[in-house]
Amino acid sequence: MDLSTRSSAAVRTLAPGYFALVMSSGIISIGTHLRGFDVASVILLIVAAVSYAVLVVLSTWRLIKFRRDLYDDMADSSRAFGFFTFIAGSNVLGVRLMMEGWHSTAAVLLLVAALTWLVLGYVIPWTAVLGTTKRPVLAKANGTWFIWVVASESVAIAAAALQPVYQDLNRLLSAVAVFSWGVGLFLYAAAGIFVGARMLQYPVRPTDLTAPYWVAMGACSITVVAGAQIVEMADAPMVDATRG
Image (cartoon, rainbow, N blue to C red; front, side):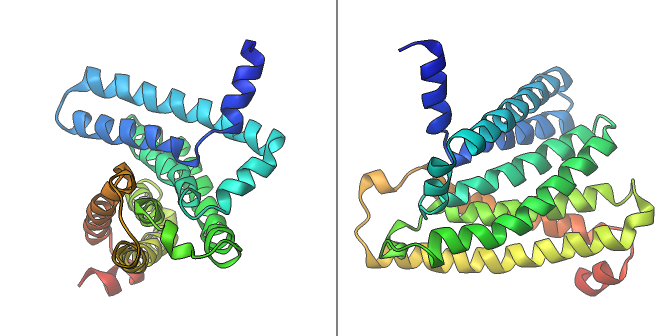
C-alpha cells in the first residue's frame, strides 16, 4: 500500500474527536503560562496551533471525499458527539492566543466555533439520536455526550475573555456568554441522565468504561470556570441578571 492510499484510508477513518488533541495541548499551555513556565507554554501552543491547522485540512478533505463515512459517524450516537471537540478546541486555542495578544484571531475562532456550535447543536442530536433507525439509541450513550457541554461552556469562556477587548460589543458578548453557559448547564443535566440511565439499564463491560467517561468531570469543571468568568465580566444586563 503506497503513501497516498494509506493517507486516504487514514482520512476516511479519521475519528470525530481528534480535536481533543488541540483541547488538551491548549489547556496545558494556558496552565503553564499562568504558572510562569513560558517555554513549555509556547511549545504546547505551537503543538495546539499546528494540530488545529492539520486537523482542519484533514477534516475538510474527509468532508469532500468521504462524505458517506462522515455521515455514518454523525449517525452513530457513540461517536457523533466527538464532533463538538472542534468547537472546544477552537475556543481553547483562541483563549491561549489572546494571552499573546492575538485578539482578532481569537475573535474569528470564537465566531467560527459559535456558528458551528449552533449548527451541530441541531444536526447531531437529530442524526445520532432522533433520526437514526438503530435501536436502542440509549445503549450507545457514553461519556462523549458530555463533550456537547464542554463545547457550550468553551463558547461562554471565549466570549467572556473577549469582552474587555471589544467593549463596543459588550452586550452581545455578554448575551453569548450567559446563553451558552445556561445551555451548557441544561445539557450537563440531560447528558448525566442519559448516560446514567444507559449504565443502569444495560450491561457495562470493562471495554465500555473508556476514557470518554472522564469528560463528565471535565464538563463539570469547565462549567464552573465559565460561571466564574461570567461573574467577573463587566456590567451588562445579561451579566447583572445572572451574577447573583
